[in-house]
Length: 88
Image 1: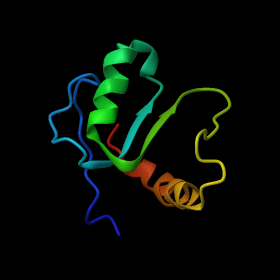
Image 2 (image 1 turned 90 degrees about the vertical axis):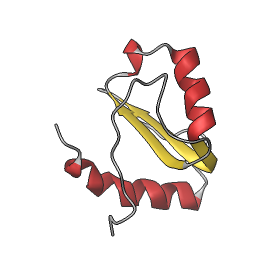
Image 3 (image 1 turned 45 degrees about the vertical axis):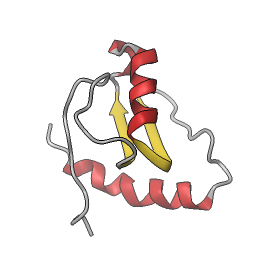
Image 4 (image 1 turned 120 degrees about the horizontal axis):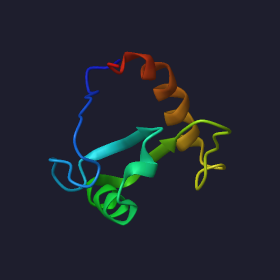
């Protein structure tokens, strides 16, 4: 069910959303362009408690901070098929 799924595009360091309103922030093959300190501060502001920040790029990908977390794995498995819906 994607009824509660939204895609937003904004500068990584200034995302126009309210505090603690986001379950998942993703970036693919782009983090090297960010002001990382500002991006991590913005991500912390936006994410709900227990929210996930997913950064990936070319090469081997891994999940850190949640290897033993069944809910994180469930979310990862649920979101992965939806990535094909992202406009390119």
